[in-house]
Image 1 (cartoon, helix red, strand yellow):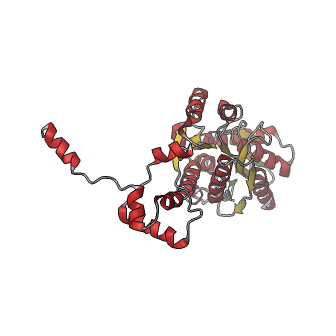
Image 2 (cartoon, helix red, strand yellow):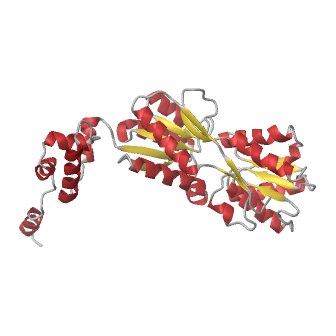
Image 3 (cartoon, helix red, strand yellow):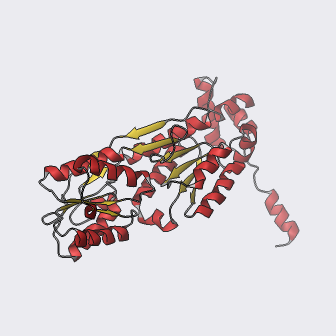
Length: 343
């Protein structure tokens, strides 16, 4: 195809519909169309319906770049996972949160941008990118104590909301969290009510809120236990297997274990079965999360249910409030014990 032919083919393409086209089809002013596109304030019901029909009929699509120049908003929010990239695919909890936040933001016509901040250098680099105007705010998941990302975002004034209680921060950070400590109390109290007396725990990382608060809930019920009954994990299946094997070596009289994530519990059950231990007859196992993994294990996992849908929707709600100029806020959501076959 010659250059003139290419130019002619391009010139035959119909022009993209404009706001003026929508206004003409709807029989309203361009200003009315603009008000509908920006939330529908001060627009009558009939006019609103006419504009919406005209948008569908013309196929008009908002020019987000042009809108951002006017509103000074990017129309997007970053979802930041502070873990290695493979954790996004291994741990269903992250997918639950990502899906829920994406769906909630889509209801406001806001795009979700996923980024992974696995290392300290990643977090510094991403912090600079976030505050360069590419996004209106950020949702931070699995943030570790001492992360430079929090201070970077705070220093630059970018609105953000954490999933989980921020360690080392007071009321200057907005967050949404499940009640990790109470959930742990529910699980350990349940195990003790079933007659178990030597109850071990496989904790999360000590620089994360879940690692701190779930261990605290364990001690709330049992007091200060033998240190041999406490082993630290990192919320991976491999860590659950290794920690369970260590517990068996350190405490051969163990009759129950509270594993502070379902993914680690899957690993713990595999280690117990490899050691010839029956679950729950020899050793009962309780998890935390109620992810899809809980019903795929053999036996099915007794666990603590986190309210994933509400966690996501509340994170989005708080972030949009911050973007609009509201003060920092925190939401703590209750958890529930789900009894199945492993304990």
